[in-house]
Image (cartoon, rainbow, N blue to C red):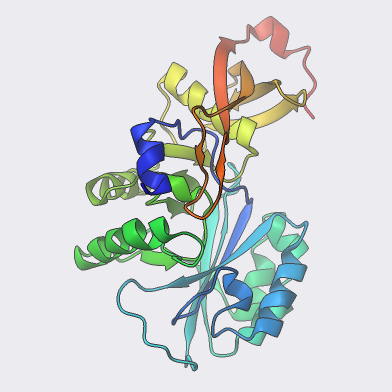
Length: 315
């Protein structure tokens, strides 16, 4: 049987509007094996994992485990672990890091504040600071979620690390197994599918230069999926690759949607987004039954005249 990733690639399933949604990411280093629900099925204390899940619920924070690429010793103790927090909403994008010895310190974070984009709670709880190193390249490698993530993700993560990408990490889950290898780049929060090492290096160079690479992009985790598709469509239409230039300021409807995308220079676009079904049927993951995954299509992108802008109230 063909893997879900091979079938999706062969069918040229579109990537736009398929990224995981999270305004803020909290990434905790945890070496060793990961289970399907990694926060409660790794060598991290499962009680702590459940507490982190509960603390993050409804806050816009997504918690994931990370580990360095390579062979993973089945060790139960970690002397010191890296922790990252990243906020991805344009106008307030940041990435902070900390080194902790006791993961229970994570429960001192105010998750509601973290989700609102306030780094002070992370810094105060963990003695954190702004990250000054390379951008993070997080490759999903959790084979317990889907075998494609291990078969395709782990070699990519290893290749990135071997070629000197300092910010390369394996991560537990980014969604969209059928788009493996999947990648999340921080601090900007754009996700990518069917990633290859040479393309990842171009993406990371773009991050250093404040640019978003559109090829293979699934969308920004800062937005819900209609907004992800709308933003990428405007980037293409306006030939705009500056990170932080575009924001989703309004979404009307419940499918189809009318999404208003704003540029920092004052321009705005009204984007029609329609949810369709990916056909013919295919598996969303290797362990699932045949189905028709949702896809986000953009039939229209219209730049709004300035006279219209004055009369539109943002939500």
